[in-house]
Image (cartoon, rainbow, N blue to C red; front, side, top):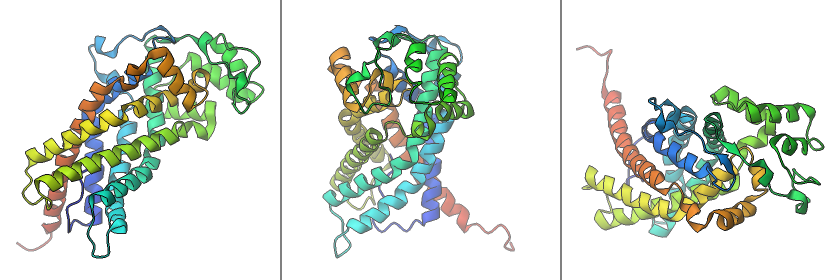
Length: 349
């Protein structure tokens, strides 16, 4: 999460956007192994897996744990570059007649910010999840396609069939009445040859699902991000008001503590949403979960309530470190840019 803007902050828009983008990209690269561990643990389904993947940590190289890092870093840089501008704009919009803001208004401004900024990151989240999932398939993960859901009861389902899917090929073949031969061939090809590079994954998603493949899980992603922003900003703002409303004397150590406390609140309240989001962005989610409510029901019945908090620990480390790294990186980047703006390399000495 990015820091809340200071009251009467005179940082210009370009500086704030550059600092936000730098902080967003840097924190993503620094904490991505935890994102990878969180995502892989959420994708794993002991009920459906015939064979688990070979863990990347068994390898000498940590490169597999950075699968999809560049994609997510790009999305987070775009998101972070606009966050401060959006939050300031929404804060002014929600301000009272005398220009002041209250805690409830800050919460609403954070909620509005989370909604808008999520539109940037949804396609990148889908690509990142697909790259990690395909890496798991490359490492030997096998899913039991015989347990694909029977979609006969859902007349609006795009996978409507008259028989239960039993194998990967038969599952894809049942779609033949609803999609072109070209897309059917692509489904079969990528089921056996999962792609893991950015251009190849983009091609795979478009070839097998079209443009809608880049917006899978959009509603749950937007809701999760809105909750993230609302919980984080409200917690951070409350702590700020408790320590120093003007933030004039808040130390860097206190900033770290405020960021960590806000992150704990975020993970505790939104982890189930994050799990469902990941499951809905997997390549075969329409075979295993025909819709969001089916996904929630099957996870609860087949895997238990605890599964909704699967991956909470790496996510807590990631979110808390991300907050701290983002806060400090943003502050130092702003100071660095402002210092550079005062330098005049072509002036006479």
